Image 1 (cartoon, each protein chain N blue to C red):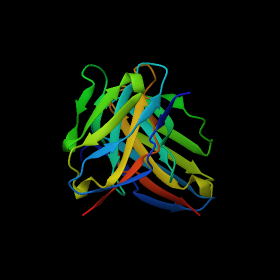
Image 2: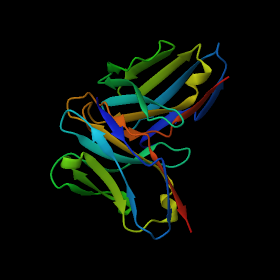
Image 3: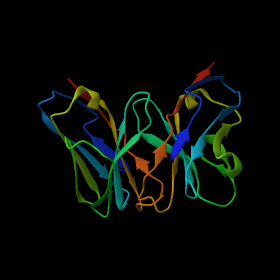
Image 4: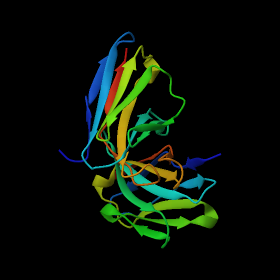
Length: 114
Length: 113
């Protein structure tokens, strides 16, 4: 079955600390992978995406993610977290011939303490 | 306006009411989507329209009725909803209906009394 797992429901980090949000997927086809961020009361904003090529992808706001096919993972990282990064983060997977259907993880809520 | 807009942003309705949610995209995209976001659950894809044709209907109850009159507008007509339908309803659009990046609107917060 196709699925996306974000093992951490809630993470708290100190401002300036590094961050890693985990994402594991189960998908039959070659996956396209996305990370989105959602601030309270807002829609989802794309942080970065992986379609092919270099497995380390850079996104907006200083985020990056690494695709590891052998581990079926696409973890999101940031070297130094800012208070404005507090939000909910969603990993999603799709494929070229799936008619736009994305499968989302449950989300990880990030809190940042001063 | 730019991007994807949704109206209203908040809606409270009784179970016997009929209401509609509106989505408009200003990105020149060809595909549009409705998602339901409930607390503590992953986003659920409800409907996909590509070139104004419905290509996905994800086992959604008939009390939800989508309409896509053109590639820029998408509606979700609601009637005889249940309290468990209370959620954030998100609209998105993409250039094509494949794995192209989806751009989301801010959502409509729906409460069914």
